[in-house]
Length: 401
Image 1: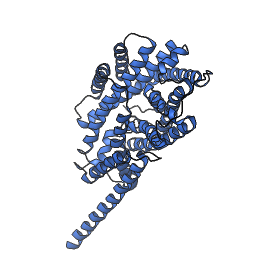
Image 2: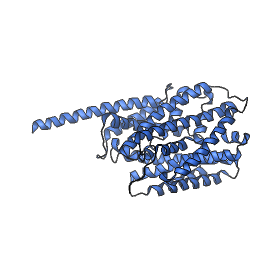
Image 3: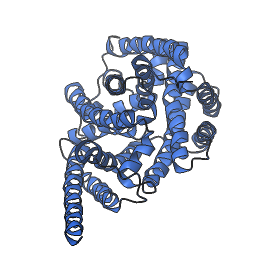
Image 4: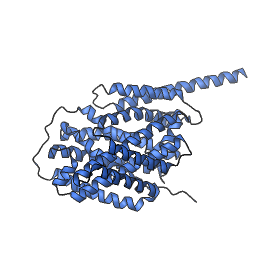
């Protein structure tokens, strides 16, 4: 029986759900000190950089029909790629906890039953999504995304057309370069996941492009809602804006289902990454365990500021994908048959350290773009030199014979 593939529309729905997120709205509020014009410029610039990288990462998986962490083995070796699978599982547990925490706090502000109750409700819904499975979510996703689309339109109307005279005072709270990097950070956080979904696509190129574009547009929209809320209403608390606008139940639906549709992807991909570490692991069961662990962490630990977490993700996965882009699109090499590709692992470490260094500099384009360009150039030069040496050795062996 032929395995069912996901359509372009279904992939688009998945990434629409990834973009509609309370965490993205909250991150957007950090842009308010720039003012509307510069804030929009930073959001668009950062998302353009991030979503081009998201497309390239997803297309590798779509072309090879491999999961995200399986594609890392093509550049870093069968065992070298396990490092990134392990780091990815850790960041996905973190993301699961953060998303549940943010969703529960916002839901509790609308309907006060205790944040821990909302953690349990959201966690249970995520587990339900996991049991239904990615290829069986079609009609549920259509209904859910349609509802979220309508409700976010209402939220936009409340924020931008309510006639509120409140304005956020433009300040030096964040530089343009730091804002660009914060805009890059969200699509960058999905780099280690996107191939888990594009590998199932009927039409690899179109589905990957549709996924990246859909996510980019929706994520920009969420950032804009957060920034607009802070500028036009003078508050960072989206739940309070919903309450003041009379969006009690509707606001609650936005909060809960946007959290579920995004966090489901984190837990699902954690299961897939775990399978790439050890094939005997049941991916669905592991995903449920991650959802439960995230729920417990959300109940027990405060997670109010995620900027450091976002930058850490960028420093790990930006140089990783830079090496993979160099190998797959330029050098056209595959190290999957070797245990470790030490050359590429060393280049990744250089890229990681370079990213951390660039974070200390206020670059107008942020840290990700220069880090990836430099890392890619290093990987290409090192790869061509290695190929030239290999060719020279082969020639010497032939001469000796």
